[in-house]
Length: 311
Image (cartoon, rainbow, N blue to C red):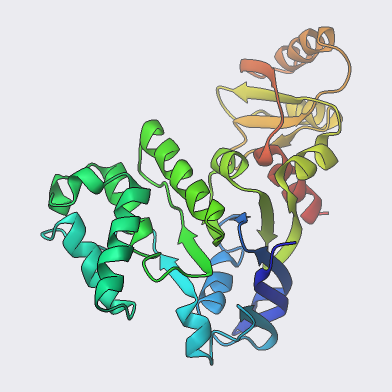
């Protein structure tokens, strides 16, 4: 059984009259990737700041490698932190950037060269070692940004939206890098709004809503617990449906996206029932753009949890 590198127990933190964290408990093991999911304002950033030692909890505890990061330099030294924005020197080369960050992380002498060589290899940038950052693609810069946070071989790596603004090929390369880091024994916690990304790369997912951790577990288990053996219906409209159509959608147990142009839910009945759903919606005056059935994912789990939290 892998050692626990992050242990959060009953974490609470309030700002004025807003409870940003409400009894949050979560663990991350060595050699595991956990995705932290939730809408803006759910408490993800507050939780990440507490893990990074930048925020004191009102109650509860956060332990990194067994120590409290807010008060322990050794706990903070066991962390690697990768921000969403590229935090590198644009006029320095790949090698020079990594050498700077290695020394900032406390490495010296031969350890700098060895860590830089490993980081460049993991990022697939060994052949670009002497290229300046400004000459690299966005995906390459993202990979360099990630490995810059791993030069001191942290026990736990924290990332915020690691693939924001990159194309599909670059995203796949970043996912491959995260798996390499996981397989080296590193624990990884990343926050994202990209449910497909979380399902593809994470071993476990944790959902936060209104400061609470409402569900956490292996990705496949979360999807199965929500949908069972059913698939997912997706109904897309040209514009948000009126009340009559909303009643039909509710009867089918479909829930809406934020702008109500897309509705999702478990498939009930056979495929022939979808023709009846479409006909009923059109009779109710709704302009249906598309109805399809797909394998369910974490987006559907999130919509289910959000709908349940409103009850």
